[in-house]
Figure (tube, rainbow, N blue to C red):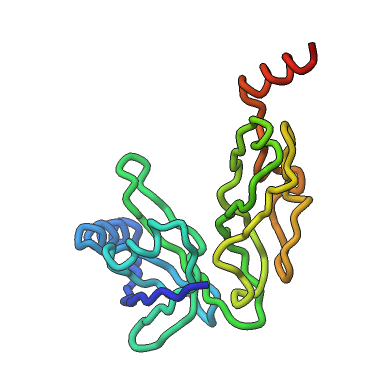
Length: 196
């Protein structure tokens, strides 16, 4: 996994919810995003710059983040993101501290390789799941999960249950379809003509 450098500042939590809302609103107005760091000895409330996280959030790649808070560097992953429903602006980020001997669950992008037999026969290859949820030690998580589709025939699907990656446990439903070769009109026409 690639590493991303990010600077964060600790923030105080207000006693009343009205004060808390006011503080968060002021933080967001100041181009900062409230965040919480879980997984350590204690939960840490912090804020990060909206511009600093742009390269971390708006990308298909996954990262382990070197998060610097008050001079201390902690290895984390992005656990959860909350977006504003209308503007799609980032409202909140949850980070999870990682260590060498505790597995984490993270979504990893899927990449297809090869030329499916069904595509050669006139079908269309579709990717149904762009990411798969995996559980593993963060040091063993690859940047992407590469799936070979050479033997995928016309009208056939590849499900999560048929996949295996060394050192990774797939957390998605076993019967979930990852990719499929769908029949196109041209392929149906060719089949009908061949059947006559």
